[in-house]
Length: 147
Image 1 (tube, rainbow, N blue to C red):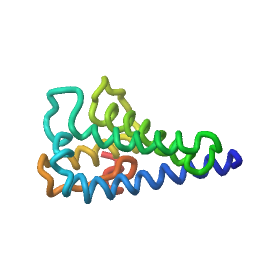
Image 2: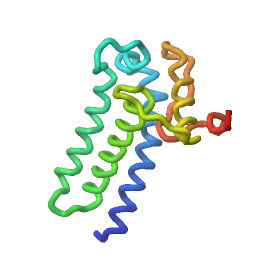
Image 3: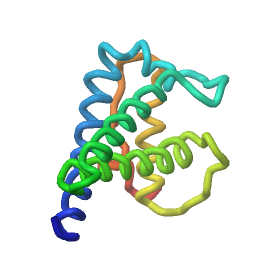
């Protein structure tokens, strides 16, 4: 597999992860898996929350793909790399920037502020429903307008 193919697989996996994460968030996390995800919509007393188990599961899937294909460095390896990269983006973007699990950085970037606004709307309700804006990197246009 050449370099451009590997990069293409990583980028396609990133896009797929955003779509899969959106669907899982909407239909599973705010559905039958709410009993785990609701910890993310409540005030946090500890650094960790039950919802973090989902990150561990995604990380385990990525690690399995990386280990399984480590010799050939084929498609499965690069898919694992893409899932890992999405996990890093999730950590920095979601846990650090949006939820301030660490001292947050300040920005005036319209895209970053729009994503943060959309996520705040998502957390407006501490109940399973109603809820909107389930993506990590994508949100409705209305959140990106200058205010």
